[in-house]
Length: 218
Image 1 (cartoon, one colour):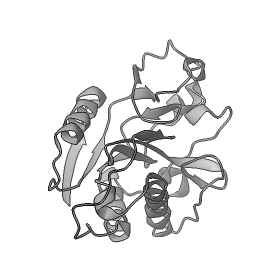
Image 2: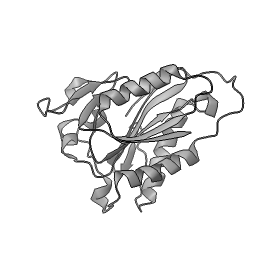
Image 3: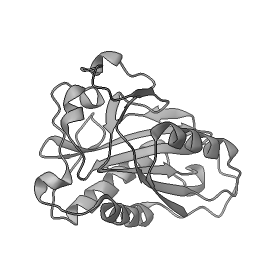
Image 4: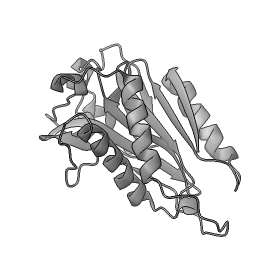
């Protein structure tokens, strides 16, 4: 597993780098996890509806992308983790990877004394019904890209200018709201440890069947 701590990266170059890496992978390519932040940007999934952007005059760019899900916001103070994983080699299905990502976030938040959980039919992680983390994946030839975002100390105002992940009135929260003063980098290291703990080891056999293409919602 290769871990890249990239700092603050513009969204479009990061997306192109993920796609290029995924397209060029061979059977022996090591999996990677990228930890980073983005400047302010809205991203809209492949089946996303533009009407979920409530303030198109906000000045925040909107990028249409190839993950599942509706619209979400990325900005400074939000931890982003991209998981570039060969699912068949780790004997993982897409839904299992999504659940693993959610569990890693839940375990990370538990380390700060926060009780978080899932919500039926609405992927992501929630505290008391308020969303603190979003997920979105794309899988091609059994290999994933995109990943998750966890609100640490991000400006929440831009979430009020959208229907987050397509849900009208969904309240978004961040770690700072609960008195957690950790930096994005510090939270990233805790999350990374849980992701690495939960990810199954690479299977010895190189003849496992590849997974289907597809997207998962945010």
